Length: 81
Image (cartoon, rainbow, N blue to C red; front, side, top):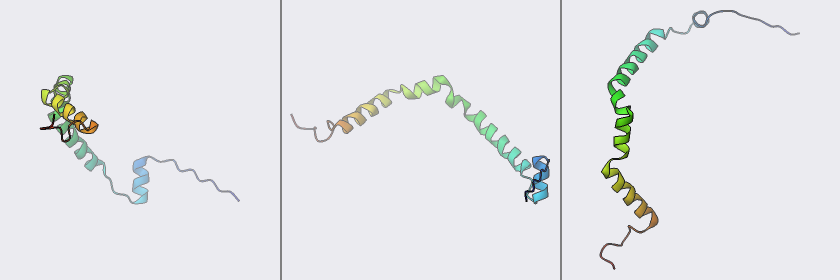
């Protein structure tokens, strides 16, 4: 015996039928807060700001130190000739 049941309803109707809470107001509030935070910080993600962070003079020194320590050239070489 094979029984097929097809139910045609919207997601809202299905949530109400199953007794699940309506989270739409919470989702709207969170999306508004997220959009506000993104708008406040959008200037940090401009191409100019990203390139400025990448090509910071201190960043070049950090990369040099990192590669020197990874290759073993930076460990214990001070004071030795």
